[in-house]
Amino acid sequence: MTVWISVNGFGRLVSAETASVSVFDHGITVGDGVFETLKIVDGEPFALSRHLQRLRQSAQILKLTVPDENDLREAVAAVLNAHGEHRSRGRLRITVTAGEGPLGSDRSSRLPTWIIATSALPTWPSSSSIVTIDGLRNPRSLIAGAKTTSYAENVVALELAHNQGASEAIVGTVDGLVCEGTGSNVFAVIDQQVCTPTLSTGCLDGITRQLVLQWSQAIERDFTMEQLRDAREVFITSSTRDVHPVTAIDGRILAVGPRTAMIAGEFAKRCAWDIDP
Image 1 (cartoon, rainbow, N blue to C red):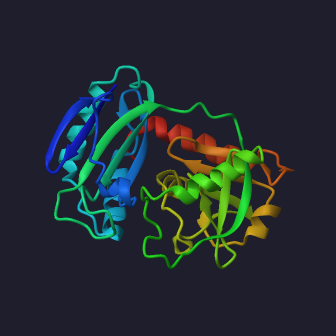
Image 2 (cartoon, rainbow, N blue to C red; image 1 turned 90 degrees about the horizontal axis):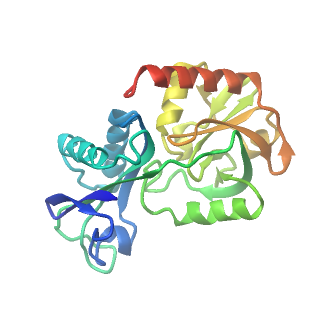
C-alpha cells in the first residue's frame, strides 16, 4: 500500500511500511489536526470538492494552515493511481495536522503535516442499531463543528454502543438536544417531517447530510433525545454509509419507513449521476 505524506513542505508517495511522522507531531501529541473521509467509486473520490471545502472550514476553526487545494487534488490523484485494490470501492482519508511541535499545547512555526491514505470500504449491514447517550456535546465549544483528529470521546461512545450490541451511538448536547453520531449525522421523522439537528447543536456539517437536505424535503430542526427515542422513522448518514436505515433505538425495534426508503433511493440515484455534486 502507498500513502502520500508531506512533512514541513516536502511531500512524496511512500510505502505504508516505511511511512512515518515525527513522534513530536502535534496531531499525535495533542490531537491538533483535522481530517476528511471520502468513499472511492470507480477510481474517483466522491464529492471531493465538498470535502476539501469542509477540510478548510475545520482548519479555520482550529486556526490551522491547509495546503493549496490543487496540491491536495494532485496528491489524491497520485494515491488513487497507485492503488488498484481500492479503486472500485474504497475509503480515502485526508489528514492535516499542525506539524511538529513541543510536548504541550503551544504550536511551532513548522509547516503542517498532511497524509493521504486509502483502505477498503466497510461492508455495512442493511440497517443500523443505535443507542443514545445524553449530555456529551457542548455546542459552545471552541472547536464545535470541526472534524478534528481529537476523536477519543467518539471512540469511547462507539465502544459503549458495541458493548450493547449496537453499531452506532447518537450523542446529545449538554442542553438535552440531539447532536450527532460518533461518525454519522442523524435524521428522524418528527411531527410528520424528516428532520436533522441544526448546526447550532455543534454537529458536523456532514457531506451526506448536506446532500440529503438538498435532494429531499428534509429540514434542519432541533429536537430532544426523548423525541428521537420515540420517533417512528430514523436513519443515519455518513460518507461511507450513505443513507442507512435504523431498525433499533436503545433496544426498541423500528421498521424501515417509506420516507427513509424514498430518500435512500433518491440519494443512490443522484450519486450515480454525479461523482462531485
